[in-house]
Image (cartoon, rainbow, N blue to C red):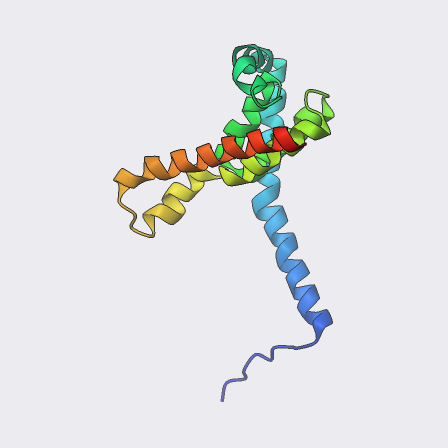
Length: 155
């Protein structure tokens, strides 16, 4: 006779189990992305690429009240939301961005975040025809840009 696993209804046990799962997600999924983002941001900065990107993208990002370097947050967020957050924090600690500018970027990070990952994981699995994928990506990016305009206007 098999011994069924006993599930506890004790709130403390449920909390501990949830905390363990959250810790594992943070260590195995989020931390590598954030660390990668810090490394990329630092490499771009050391190589002078960040300044070049900032100069080239300054007019576009200026529409949102952001320095040109902020485009790196959006580009990395497109790959991974946690990486975009890591780059934003890196730019904040360097003084390139301030808290108000992070507030402008925050909704965009999550509205367009991780699209590259989601293309295969969600759209492919859901059998969404590939001809619609670019439209879905553009809509998310448009939503992010609109959100940044609203955040700039109301912050």
